[in-house]
Image 1 (cartoon, rainbow, N blue to C red):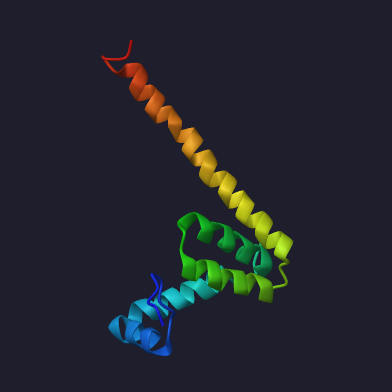
Image 2 (tube, rainbow, N blue to C red; image 1 turned 180 degrees about the vertical axis):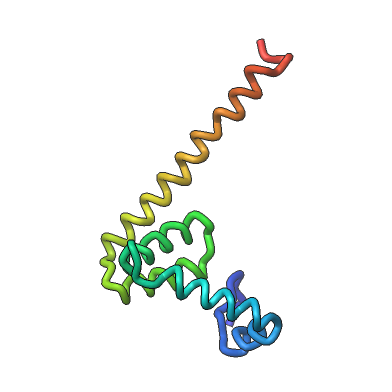
Length: 113
């Protein structure tokens, strides 16, 4: 099998990670459980948000895990794809909005005609 950039998470890797920092892992798991629990937002909505954010942060493990979790919470393919499009728009919107910094720099540059 050809190596990939993102290796699969195996039981051995999970155990190694747990043994390397058990307290931090326990705290993270508790935090994650609290964040994704039913609350003011339903679990499905939270997972759709996570799918969108995972695409912005570009974490393949998060994309896969939260897509699976969203499906388990009843999200449809259309809902998941719509969440991804929201993420794409926000990512592009951020680049557009930050163009203000470049234009401001140009406008204040001594070499700008």
